[in-house]
Amino acid sequence: MKRLFKSLFLVSACAILALGVVGCGEKKEEKKAEAPAAAPAPAGPKTIVFASDATYPPMQYMNEQKEIVGFEVDVIKAAAEKGGFKAEFKNVAWDGIFGGLENGKYDAISSSVSITDERKLKMDFSEPIMAIEQMLVVGTKEKATDLAGLKGKSIGAQIGTTSYFVVKDVKGFKAVKTYDEVGLAMEDLVKGSIQAVVADSPVAVEYTTKKYADKIKIAGVLKSDKVENIGIAVKKGNKEVLDLVNKGLAAIKADGTFDKIKEQHKMK
Image 1 (cartoon, rainbow, N blue to C red):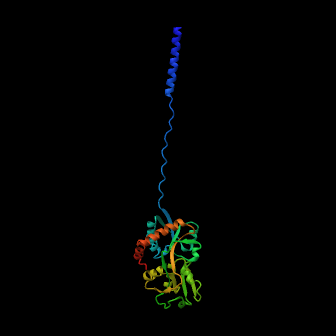
Image 2: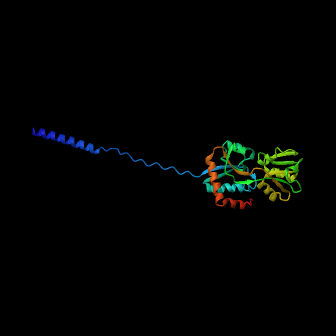
Image 3: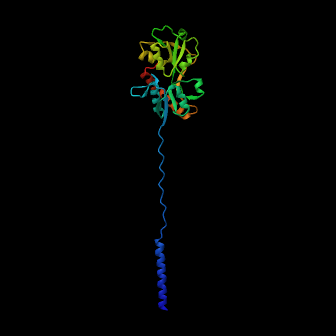
């Protein structure tokens, strides 16, 4: 009996020990702590792509390195720095430049675009960059000083510009010839194919004082009852781009940068 009790005790003790070993061996699987999600990288400045018809010196043109340069290009680059955006320029022919904006091929147009009521129906504009005038350019021997003095003669202008709109409905000319580029009109004037060209004041000054200084001259300013301003065009409703451009333009005009750029380019 004593032996039986001893055996039972040993069996019980072993069972308890076995259970203890098993219990000690069980470990709850610990859930690994998840690493915190990385914060998204801060977005860089917005890039705004500007279309420019780079055949319009001194406002925008191609230099010898095939880069788009000019007064308005420098203005936009300075505005980008102050306005917190990046500016890229794309050379686009004038005759398709507004259609490309509407179709989203670029964000804005920086190409000496005159702000007109008709254009404002189709696109939005920045605050004006500067005022311009329409000038009559003729050969150095021409005596006419206004459109009336050119009756019976041929006159030229770049198609789709406010320069063209000034003369397109005027009666009495032999012909009103349109050109894809203002430089081609000036070439025809020098050759004698036409007798006058109407062009924006900065362009008229450029061609009469530099490239063809001894062959053509400014005959006069074509007066208008409205001040003609140029600005940056954006797609209708594109407030984000418009606000950035306006912010930059306001900053460079406030701190004197705009005036310095005008001085560098000898702009009045």
